[in-house]
Each structure stands twice: as C-alpha cells, then as structure tokens.
Length: 72
Image 1: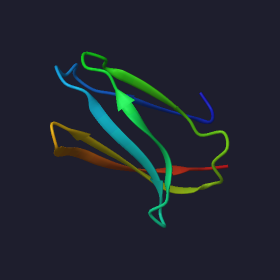
Image 2: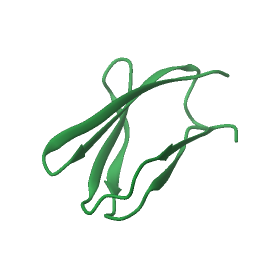
Image 3: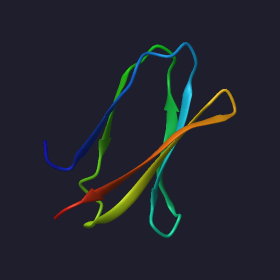
C-alpha cells in the first residue's frame, strides 16, 4: 500500500507510546497504541520523500527505534 507504514509486533501487555519524527527531530505524529494490539498503520501521504524515524516506548523504556525511507 502506498503512503502507509505498517508496523507489526508481538502483542504486549502494556501500552506503547510512539513518536514519528523527521530527520531534523521534529515530531510529525505521536500517540498511544493500546495494550494487546499488535499492528499499527501510519498514514504517510502528507510526508515528502525522505528519511523518518519511529520511536516506541513502553513502561518508561525505549523498546525500539526504526528508520525508514519514503520514496515519492
């Protein structure tokens, strides 16, 4: 699917706080993924081509960071 980032993981028993940032560190999207959900869709249709970073925190701990590139 174009203009969509799909993130999947094992279901966790706690909420995940996420931030989607551009390479300048500006937060483009942020929110909370409820406990026991295992998939999140991010709409990237308004994003220009470039490199972006997704950060996820859970239980006050950094769970992961993922870098992705959107190609126009």
